Image (cartoon, rainbow, N blue to C red; front, side, top):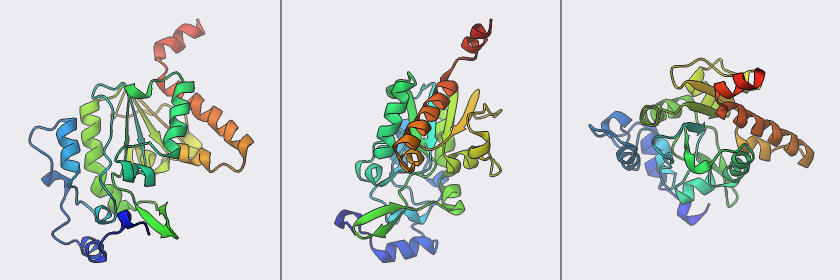
Length: 233
């Protein structure tokens, strides 16, 4: 286990027992919330036990008035170390997909459902572990705050965890991928795969096929409905 990733086991056990160190997000939020004040408050988040083994909180980043907001599952190993969302291998793939789709990453608000990296040791590596329902529920207020402050025109859920958290447990990315979903969360809501799934493709040909489809999903999400109507004339 990397030295910088080590955490006192007693802290982890205490957090899991629901000790006083664990507190709901509502107790951290300032009276007048901004993205900056929410980000600062999230640094002290103890809403679930994941903080005890994570290096730091990884909050969302991007302009408050971002037209597009993309939500993944949780930060990965690189994000946990650097403190920024989507800067690891999956993030670099997302960068390429955004560029191919004609979307400026600097104009997109990027975040995750869970703000701490959940991992399991495998030799010297830290391997992603899927967050459970209680961890997702504990972290949910942060994404609600981000949605309320950013108020994106387009919301893109990246992967099943984000989609099922925001669109309901019955939502299936495999079946409803690329569909525009009616939702109060944003005028345009869509789900697609998480870019990490493309990295796990069986071979280069499969990755190319999946990448093309992913780019098409991003193009469709960002497309102005008026443009679609003009093309049909």
